[in-house]
Amino acid sequence: MRHHKHLSRLSRRSRLTSTAVAAATVAAALPLALAPGAYADAPGEPATPDLTVSELSGNQLRPGEVRSDSVTLTNNGTVATDGVTFRLRLTRGLAFTAPVDGCTYSTVGDKVRQAVCELDVGIAPGESYTVPVKFRVLKKALMEVVEYGTSRTGEDPGEGYDQANRRLALDTASSADLVATGDEATGKPGARVIVTPSIRNDGPGWIQNNESDDHPALLVNIPKGTKAVEVPENCKPFGIDGPTGPSEPGHPKYVCQEDDYTLEVGEIEAFAIVLKIDKGRRTDTSGVVKATSNYDIDPVYDTNKANNKATLSIDVQ
Image (tube, rainbow, N blue to C red; front, side):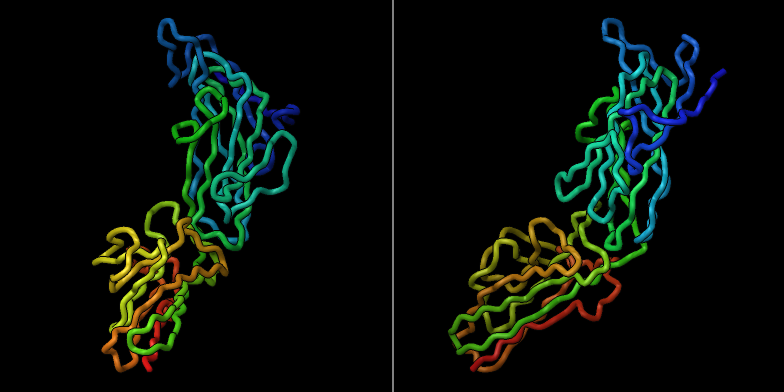
């Protein structure tokens, strides 16, 4: 029979931040026989721990709330852990609560917040250790990701995901408003003019699609009677349902987006395009620009479609 006891306080090294680890419960030692689910190491191989981490429950969040949950570390191996390194990563719409001794905080990758916490705990074969996980949901939260866990041996988890190092995509009850802005220019037949359409995020959520390559973009229709003779590198020709190749002049339609595929709240991405007015053009002309995705699929988070389109106007003199 297993006997559980509650640890009233953590050791100096295991006092984890309220964002990752702040209290724990540990199952008492089992008999010498392997616990259910454990395995024996292959002959000649060194005995090792084999940790698994349970999954966080639920994936729905509301901006402004504090998420309090926990995960359980279970040792299915044949020897106890010599401490555990537990790591928690949050995308930029989430944030840690007050820091606590025992964790090191940093920012990695694309502004991802990270806490690495050292647990001075030996989890024996068959035992479990419960780790609270806590973080704040910021006002700008929209499409977020939480990465949490350790390695199978309890050491640094490194990169990649398995049963010990997990990833959870989160949805929030929020939205983001994509806005297209056009431009106008004046020129004579045969002249070159510059137009600078743009896309803007009016929030309240920041935009980075972590689960798909369908990213925010500006679709630009070149006004009839003009030709795009210079286009930015991040404006690619658009075919029937997506980009068709690298940037080059001469196409009737382009899809433009920044390389990081990200739009913070209030951020504006503008794209300067040089147009040449046809020599035989005698009347004004225009083209439509649209805030959409790089596949021209209206994003579900953009609930205000009224400002998604604007006009490129060319006044031919």
